[in-house]
Image (tube, rainbow, N blue to C red):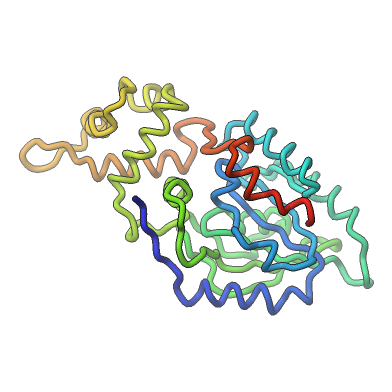
Length: 285
């Protein structure tokens, strides 16, 4: 069981930033990882933002199974919720945002204002940088890079407020915690990386076995420990006594999965029963 307790001061501060600035914005953009839109979705986002317009941005779509991502966009559409899939690294999919923004009525002469929220490491700052056309927001490949709030002008149509990543006090569902760990949304020092990597291997064997064989030259089987050892062997990760360095292999597997080097992989689909229940209230957005 993955038991994660992570609620440092800056995350509590993020919730205050969101609440304090809601009166200044016209819409909320929730950035989720396209590989796991449910698990990287803030559970109480609708309660947190009240009546503000919500747009769900499925970021890192270039790393996800494109057919699964298409099904997520259709899912959100059926729920009456605006969504778009984007690749913030190559600025793909951003025209859809312009289309959505045009449908939002302006109350003043000023540009529309939006606040960008999401869990750590889903690419909020990279998303903002592409819209703004400059390196205006701090970015990094580690959770927790952005610490304070910052406003950026994104042309003459919209201004965006970036916020630090936010996680909830306790992750109740083991699989949600695991997916967040797979995606690098949780700091490594809070995890048993070998256990997490074994769970990722189990998932890949069931859903994407070719990813393991193509990348690491291993034969997928039910023994995930054996596969991890084989990855260490094939990569030459050997420690004193000729033992396999499975910790290094675990770190390599997780990093290469996060970077998309194992191929386009989605961790969850929208037709899962728990997902339907979780997003049911989106009908009232």
